[in-house]
Image (tube, rainbow, N blue to C red; front, top):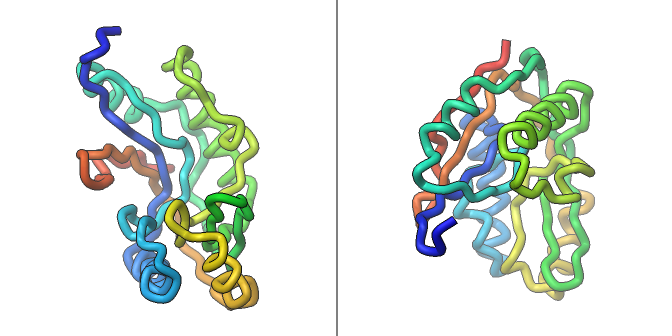
Length: 188
């Protein structure tokens, strides 16, 4: 590949309904205001199915076509959110709303990865994707460890529950400033 060839950045995710997006965004705003962690505000609340990946700009139409024709057999399903959890990374801890794992969510993510691997065999799939731990991030990257400890004292026992129907998932593309959904795959 030519070193100067333009690359597009994509990822695949479930985006909850607006009301839940607003509720999750309020947690992100709390982290921005009280714990100096603003990075999560740059991305719409979501559950990642396929982590960000780069493909050549010239392959954009093929990428969208692959997404639209993905062999997904999972039907629409209810997704529960229950409380908060964290990845206790020393340098860059993550706090998230916790989706409850269920068979449909697990199967959907597995089918997405299988389709991606078949369509793009030279592209890497990270171990963290193979060991799927669904999460809806509310603070990461710029969350300092000492402020994480302070926030986690509160958030580990904070109560939040919600549920929504997953009837589609999205192909998102980064435009240089933010992520935008460019297509949606409807589940039966």
